[in-house]
Image 1 (cartoon, rainbow, N blue to C red):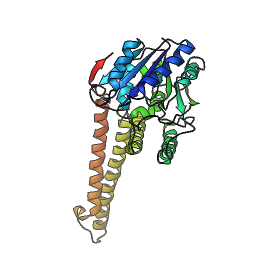
Image 2 (cartoon, helix red, strand yellow; image 1 turned 180 degrees about the vertical axis):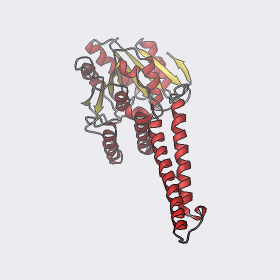
Image 3 (cartoon, rainbow, N blue to C red; image 1 turned 135 degrees about the vertical axis):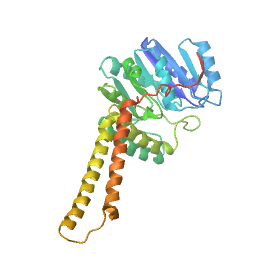
Image 4 (tube, rainbow, N blue to C red; image 1 turned 90 degrees about the vertical axis):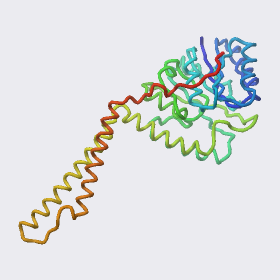
Length: 317
């Protein structure tokens, strides 16, 4: 199979028939063998009924229905699990991503040899309240991830080699950083394509909200930390703990030596326990020991919880 199209959605009943018809036209015009995997993220409208209707009309339509709303990352994770195409395309269900981009994205993967190609909505039809924070967010993501050539990390329209989606784990809200996840997994050839951004035709954005920008930065810090120290937490906690312990230990010695020096020279002195520096030094030693133990325990505990990506799927077509 040439292409798997994965479409996460939440309450998009108006756009689904038009989206699938558009995808179908593009695929047939280019002679692609394909499948379309709709992942219904706990919609409360008729989205699932429409997916069922589409699947009865065409055997290229597959569906996954979550029992409740989990979010975009879990939807992509489950869609990636089911995908069978040589190239996997992701797009949003709101008709703002154009299926006409699929042939060129497919060519860039199969002919140009990219592992991942991310769309760049250079001209956007979004309000300034969304575009300005997005620019700041993407600038930070470029700096932290080291992927300098991407302008839009969070664009829903992306193309992947099959190997990429089968070797990355999209969880929590990490869909914003799939290029970074791919890079950490060893897929280095990451490209970008300017894509057309369509104005929203029905309703309002479903995967969004002001808190996504704050959550995005927290996720970026988490991903950086896991990338840098997730395999060897002792490198972070052990080093920091050791430095704090050594600092505290040396401080305690200095406090003790100061008292002995004053005693030897007949100068006024006070008990070690009367000095505030003694308690600060002792606190540093205790915290240093705790950090060191945290690093040691981190080495023993696997970062990958066995049920982190276990989601309640009600039906599968």
